[in-house]
Length: 225
Ligand SMILES: Nc1ncnc2c1ncn2[C@@H]1O[C@H](COP(=O)(O)OP(=O)(O)O)[C@@H](O)[C@H]1O
Ligand SMILES: [Mg+2]
Image 1 (tube, rainbow, N blue to C red):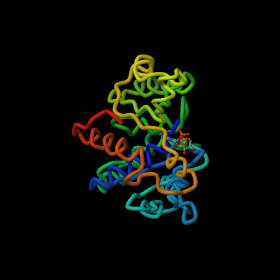
Image 2 (cartoon, protein in one colour):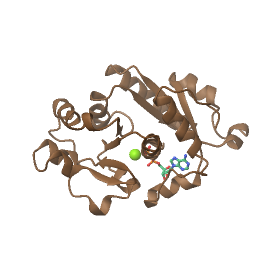
Image 3 (cartoon, rainbow, N blue to C red):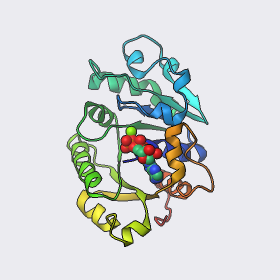
């Protein structure tokens, strides 16, 4: 749990580090626009680009230095080929394109993985979420993406010590995915679902998201939260 929040937080961290970042919602339940605060202005989605109802730039909305494209309400008639065609329209203009995929075995996950060269699986440290993360990881691998990393989200050390959450080793052992970051439980991230910025200096998750962004860029950064 926390895929969309991590997608926005990471996008912001990468952009603060000087990268041009595009976020694409690949979950037809659509929440990226809400967390990005662009819902009021939104008219077009990537389905409109694919089916020629608007040009590529008309579907891009900007806020806080980030660009976002939303998902159509259904994936009907969106082929792997059209997804690849879509990404080609944008890839020259951005340093990173982050695709926010839905949980589990869903057409949206398939379409996102079709055009991805790496993947981040986000899991909270509990049995239910870890099982979904295992399934998603296997599915991504099956599609031929082998650069997969794990973010453990909503970590509360107190709850791990008390046995109310799984420890990091258990999550890594069960998912068998290499860890790229740990994001703490952060009440301010919850404000993201109210359209408020979820990446601000001084916030408990800020350092964690910055460190994940550094590691994505190939730099080393402490794993400690
Ligand atoms: N690190 C975190 N700390 C506190 N709340 C979080 C954190 N990550 C996500 N959340 C909250 O969990 C809920 C689900 O997050 P979301 O990013 O929409 O998950 P998903 O995309 O996996 O469905 C939201 O209310 C969000 O604010
Ligand atoms: Mg989501």
